[in-house]
Amino acid sequence: MIATGLSILIVTDNAGDDVGTCLSLVTESRIGRGCEVIVIDNASIDGTPELIAARFPEVRLIVQSENHGVSGAHAIGFAASRGAYLLLLSPDVLLTDPDAVAAMAARLDAHPDLGAIGARPAPSDDSHQAGDAGGWRGVCVVMRREAVFAIGGLDGEGIGWRGRLEDAGWRVGDLPDIAARCLRSGSAGNGDQSVFSTSPSIHSGWVSPTERPTSLSPL
Image (cartoon, rainbow, N blue to C red; front, side):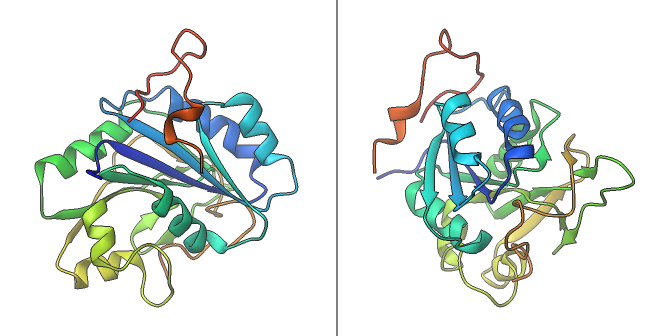
């Protein structure tokens, strides 16, 4: 299989309060290349999977019977994905700029030695200060698929992905001016928050633009 386009991986853990808004903004994004959206749900009990299935049939939903933590769920999503680039996005990070993802992917296009590019989503207000892990606040980062393979995948503990990428010879950058907001310090509901410190057909869920307004094109 030749990887093409972009895979967006979102991990949810009782994230029903946020994920609807997050996914609405994702589907309105002007990405400019083939795209798939994969949500890995970590055994939510607040109705998150049902909300996603009802409102976003174009999203590939992988529901887990137990909580694998953020890193473990990202590993599951990575194994199911086929994009050349991977956007790891927290359900509480809102892409308020519809061109944000395209800008990050374009930076990887222009710099073949760049393994990952992260945004720094601003906190939505003074009462919800977003955490800053490994230089990336929240989770909004586009990674190159071959760079993920170079560090042995997205699971595992130890040093964060940023350090592992640099140790493997990849450059890592960030775009601090990307317009995005982080609603709170958590990165995927109430589960494991240490992402950076430590099947049916993929197309089966997609609907045509006439059925649901979206700027995304399937892989």
